[in-house]
Every structure is written in C-alpha cells, then in structure tokens.
Image 1 (cartoon, one colour):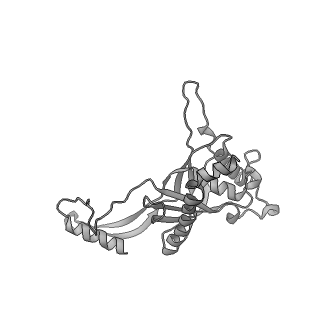
Image 2 (spheres, rainbow, N blue to C red):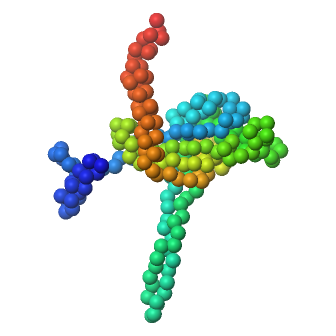
Image 3 (cartoon, helix red, strand yellow):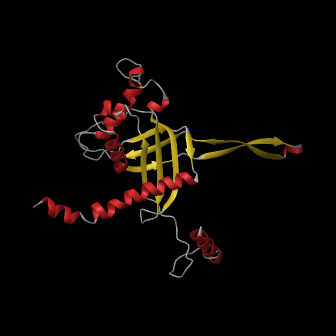
Length: 239
C-alpha cells in the first residue's frame, strides 16, 4: 500500500508534464510488462498415462516454456432506457467475463508440449473411438479428473514482487494443436504453439496474491541455487 501511496503522490505533483522520472523519493514507477509466470497447481492425475511424463515434469515444463499469456477480461453490460424526445439513460445490467485464457509456449525437441496437449485431449475424448478414456477404473468421468487449476502472475523486473495476479479454475485445453506442426522446405524457424484453455472461474483475491507470492519466491530461489552458481555446478560436474 505504501508504494501505491507514493505513486499517487508523484502523479498529483506531475499532472501538468506527466513525467515521472528522477531519483527523489516518491517517484511514480511505471508498470513494466514482460515479467510473467504461470503454474499449473493441479493437473489431471491420469494425464501421465497419455503423455509418458510425470505430473511434476509436465507442470515444470509448461511453466518454463510459457512465452505469453492473454487473460480474459470483463464487460459490464448496461440496460438502456429511452425518455421523452429520445433521451437515453442506462443502468448496470450484468457483468460478462471471458471464459478462456490463451497461453503461448516454446516447443522443444521431441515435441513435449504437443505430447501434453494431445494426450490431454485424448484423455477427455479419444479420437479413435469418440468416447472418453475416463472410466470408473480411472476415477470416473468427472471434471475433477480432467480439469486443472492455473495461476498466472506478473512481477516487477525483480521477478519477485507480484503485480497482477489471477487464478483460473476449471481449466482444460480446447484444441489438439497438431495443425500447427506444418513444415516447408523454404522456411526454417521456431514453433510457438498457442493453446486456448477453458476457464470456469476467475479469481482475483488476496489469497490468490498470497499463493502467487509463495510460488514466485519458490521460482526466485532458482536464481541463487542454479543460475548464479552455474559455474560451480559445471566445475563440479567436470571433475
């Protein structure tokens, strides 16, 4: 809250120029994009059967391969009334939030991202038979057995201070991205599959920020244990 108050103070002082630079206390720091993270907190327990990967490996791979996220927004629809002479006025009607989130991933050799989402779709509806592979033997065809929970948050450039945060529940992919794996002899380039997910509920509450902060701290710990000590790790492995 203190940072917000400082920003308000700086904005009030610079309403004319709208310039917020300098080094004095109370400078209004702009929001910088590009520092974002995701975490699939709950993947379907039967998914490893169709991907050949463990839940932890899939969760870590998707988190590390995330390139961009397009979150859903909300629209407050209004009810309009017409008065004498065509004068219009309105009151709030209902709020309509989007029910999908799109995530772009970097694909790797051996196509693990394709394997995850092809396997996820195949688990829900097998393309060979048209029916679900979630039977009573595997816990039954219930949403808790094919849907997931996805956390998304952005940070300041320190990769630790959570800025925007959201939790999406009832998440499952709506497309098997095989059509993206086209090839042309005249084109050699990268492949970044963009996957659209269904969303049932969007949470933007304090508990979401608390959970995202914990997740951010866990990811930030990699900075010291792996990144900054990379030279030591390489030296130890070469002995």
